[in-house]
Structure formats: C-alpha cells, structure tokens
Image (cartoon, rainbow, N blue to C red; front, side):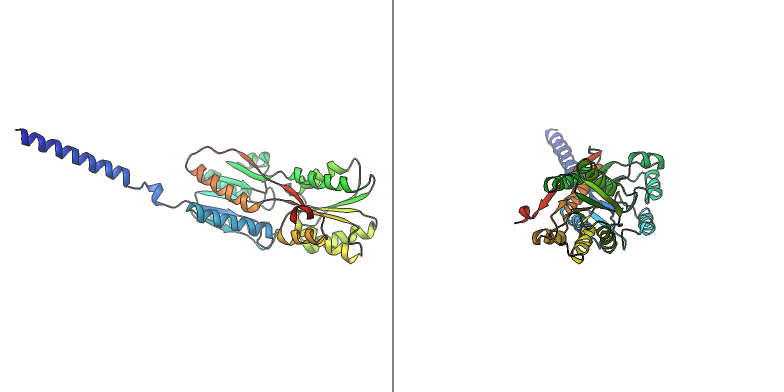
Length: 316
C-alpha cells in the first residue's frame, strides 16, 4: 500500500514538473513571430532622411524586429509617397511609422490603416490633430522636433549679430508644409520687431530652387544681411547665391537639420550655423515606442525630439 501510494505521489510530482517546464519554456505565438514595422520617410536624397533611415535599420537590428523603410525620389513626390503607403497596408505590418511630405498627402491611406486597427506613429512631419480627426486617423504618438523653437533659435542668433533695421530673408520649404511654416514663423516672430524681413519665399526643400530664390532676393536687396533657410539643403543653395553675388562673409546664412555638408560649411565659415535635429535618434525612439505600443505598454502621445543651434565654435 505504501509503495503504491508513494509511486502515485512521485508520478503526480513528475507530471507537475513536466507541465511547469513546458509552460516556462514554450514560446508564445508573439515570441515566435518577429514584430514588423513599415516606415515611410520622404527621400533618401536628403542626408537628414538618410540618417533617419539608418536609425530605423539600426534600431531594427538592435531590438530584433523588422523595419521596412520606404522613400520616394524627391520631396515633391506626394502621390508616389501615398502609393507607397497604400502598398504597405496589405503587408501585415504591426505598426506604421510615417513622415508625410505634406500634412495631408497620406491621410486617405492612414484612414484605412486606422479602420483596420493598424497603429500609427507620426514622425517628424506632423499631421495636425484637427486634420487627423477629420480624416478619421488614429495617431498613437507624434514624435518631432519643436520646429517653431528651431526658428526661434536661428532668429535669436541673427538678432545677436545684426543691427536694428537690417534686412533679412526667409527661404521656406513647400508652401503649406507644417514643419517649414513653424520654422518660418518662429524666425519671423523672433526678428520682425527689430529687423526688416524683406522676403519669405518657398523653395520646396530644393537646393537649386533655393539658389534661384536667394539670387532673386539678393538682386532686389543687395544690402541683405541674413538668410534663414528652413532646411540645410536650401541653405547650401543660398551659399551658392551669396558666393556668386560676391557677398560671401557679408551675409549670415543659417539652416536647419545639421546634415554633414552643412556642418562642413559651418566649419569653413560659409554658413554661420545650423539648427541640429537628430533624425537617427528620432528613428530609434519611434521603433522603441512602436514595440511598446504593440506590446500594450503605455507610451506618451507626444515626444519633442531635441534640437540645438550649432555654430563653428561648437564644431571645433
């Protein structure tokens, strides 16, 4: 009797240990399947977006997820970017990380994503809350630099280096683009009470267009003292215009993004400075947040990415 009872107890214990072992070691379905995210950026022609793409890919490698990074040829290809996002909708991504070219060009596809319950993280180029609500888009998180503050930083530098009444000009991004508008407004609001803003014109984030815009502004205002450009690609176009006009060293040129070529221009003195954004780090934050989101962990609805005005003194 004793032996039978002991064997029965041992048997029950062994079965319990086996079950516990299976529960403790068997991976869940979520563990078996690698998370997959679809990231839409603007164009990898621009070094800013190259850095963001690298951040996405490195974050994917670090965290053991997949990130498919898609881009288009230029920052004017709004229709192509929409088509790219539409192609992402049926690829089974666990979340979408999107940087639209304009505040609305991706909205129709993002509305479908929301209908299907695909989480959305809006990165860098923000869709205004009212536009998202009107389109039926659910945005879990927005991650971007404070673009108004970027313009303020550039404006304060100009104020510190010019005299009241001096003429300055702004080269904007694409008309209607939120980030470009915010940078323009931050600069304008900072300087307009003291300096004379003689022009504020879009150049579509494009270097050659900025060269033309800056050339025309200089021809109309040969005594211009400063350009603020909403990105570095356009600032480099302004550098060419100033050089061609024989005004190098006489016109302050400030850009935004801190791309490598612009940093070289700051070091050599053809640009006075650039407001640094950190697209590589921003991409990491987006991937980390997407993982938490899919896992059901809490994330903030908005994160302001860091920015800083860099001058030659900062780059020694």
